Length: 193
Image 1 (cartoon, rainbow, N blue to C red):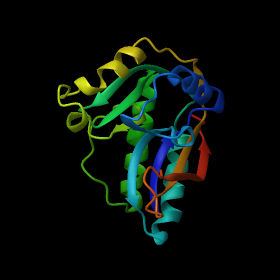
Image 2 (image 1 turned 90 degrees about the horizontal axis):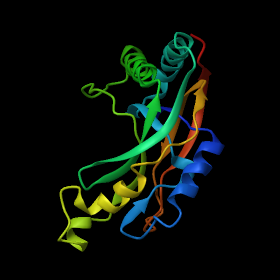
Image 3 (image 1 turned 135 degrees about the horizontal axis):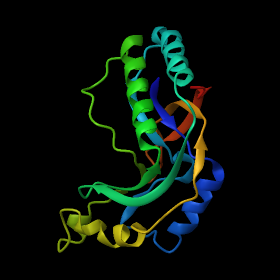
Image 4 (image 1 turned 45 degrees about the horizontal axis):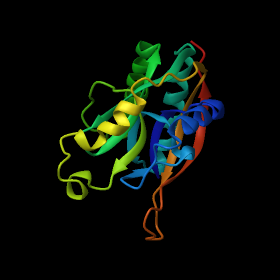
């Protein structure tokens, strides 16, 4: 089962962002579906079934040790020409700590994790359709510049983060161009601190 640990923004925050993106979406990016908007805290990849009980126990413990905190969507950024994202503001130290706890929980449960990097909070909005190829005059992040400029001043409504979610990623299987992964929350734990 392909899994990741995430913070999921509430529906009102998702709708607010969707409205901000109206008029900005075009066919230069493969835009992610609203149903898939999330802050990944730890990507686990394929997890064996026998590891799941210990993973659940350890993630529950991580949530229990973390107090609720406040976030809001804020600004925009990119990873090269590959991905456009919206950032976060608020209690980023708490978000980073929750990410570290989720990563540690997975490792201790026996999930083989890659090298741990400093967490960059981001919600992916779209991925490149190869902007450099389609628009060779733009590259090195320049192809995303119109989106970055439009989203730079974005300030979403703050919300309380009260839950840690374990999400299953169901990858596309139909072969239909543009089909997106489907995400299914398989478990969630309240933040209790």
